[in-house]
Image (cartoon, rainbow, N blue to C red; front, side, top):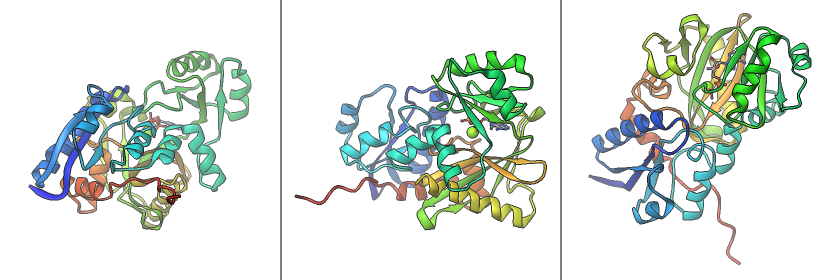
Length: 315
Ligand SMILES: Nc1ncnc2c1ncn2[C@@H]1O[C@H](COP(=O)(O)OP(=O)(O)O)[C@@H](O)[C@H]1O
Ligand SMILES: [Mg+2]
């Protein structure tokens, strides 16, 4: 066993809607780290408590959790308090990226391209929203992942139902202009001015419908990596991905989701700070196209594990 990383906990499972995906991500990371000689141990945060985590005696942890209480900054805050080094973004970047509305505010403030939007509450006048943003619209809960609660609405008649579905997940709902075109995603590693985008992946889903079924269950979605794009456009999308990541103060690793409209303009949809790490997942696919194996990717992410919040000077 290599003792460079000490005893490593792979945090997986959890209690979010994405538990099943996280179980697969964690198992993949655990197996790869063990294969590379790391003393790695699986730890299911859905079954065990923070007290158990303290007692497990890990030197650092690899976060392979997705969604609430894993990717959203809460766990990261607890790990800061415990002074237990962890992979990925810190509490602030994690919670910002978990909120698609806050994310868009930061991106717009930085001049980064993201579709126009409105925030819906139970009192919103949906007809007016449709009139001002135009149709089709995408209605989504701002805190979910894996396309849960996301609906494309083509006519005003469908708005209420789409709102009610998204409102099952969140009290505020995001209505966003629909971008017709190609779907792209860009993995990013590093932090600050060393952040670097990996090759772009294009997702080609049947009928352009990249939903939960197509993401995790069926085999009919195709992935093209590197995406077939003009080299200048590809480089510019990679720069936007890096800027979208550093604007939110992400670190370690992440994945920016984009739509490329029919005129060739990229639009940022969201930032994932703890993306899937299953064998089908997109970050490992981008890494592979850059010549990095799944195990090398896991080791690179693990090597950046640290606490992000600086302790104040002693008084
Ligand atoms: N504004 C949009 N225009 C077109 N398609 C969208 C838009 N927003 C979301 N989608 C589609 O819905 C999917 C899920 O949306 P996304 O914002 O990435 O949330 P999440 O992956 O967290 O569920 C995207 O992968 C894309 O296929
Ligand atoms: Mg997404």
